[in-house]
Length: 321
Image 1 (cartoon, helix red, strand yellow):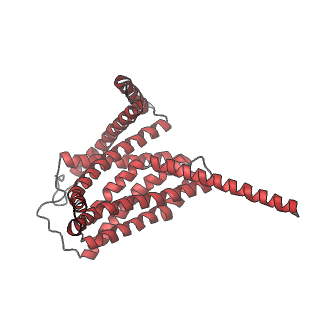
Image 2 (cartoon, rainbow, N blue to C red):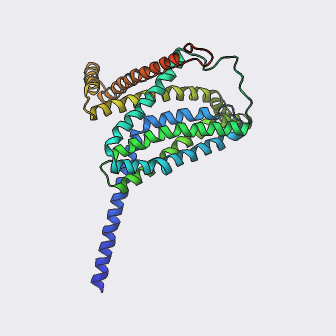
């Protein structure tokens, strides 16, 4: 009896150790995947605050909450099962899908740069937009944000899946779910703080004193600059991440030219600088990947512009201008 109990306890301990090891593996893989997706996360964080611009302060947090719930639904209900199925039945397609997502990021980043250097109106100034009820406008904004989030979430989940492709399907599911939840909470938590920072600052100015009031004034004055900085960082992150994904994807498909060029250029710069090799390597690598992203995105923006020019004008027989 005692021997049987001891054997049972040994089995329980062994199972507990196995479970702990599995949890450690999931935690480790989740951390690695989250780091790989950092660039897309930065872009997601930079984009989301724009969807609450123009609404009353009382609606800002509810709108962010609705977008966050939509983001969770995107990741856990739609993308997680699809990623698992692709990873199990068609793992070969993960790299091309990542490259398509990377190309989209390059396009978005290049289009933002294009709008900065060559601003243009998307519609005639004389166009009159019909009045929209606030509730309808909010629903449209939320729906648009969730659609944009779906693309970014797909990139995050695909990057995560690529990092755990060698693991068993249970670990893959756990890591995908953990990354989905953690990144969603982190992104929209940060967005909520950013969006409400000026309101918090105003409250401190009106009801605080001394250092508290000074902090409030800093928040009120600094929040617009933070939003502008996020826009710049988000654009840079899109180009860097998109370029790196395409370069690595091409290498996996047997096209090593871009990757070798970046490696040789970075090695030359690192040797020339001679100090802080790790920081120099990362900075130079990110720079060249970003330049590659600008090139890819620029080609896509140019092609889209050409298609718009060649598209028949609905008001006449010639091309639209």
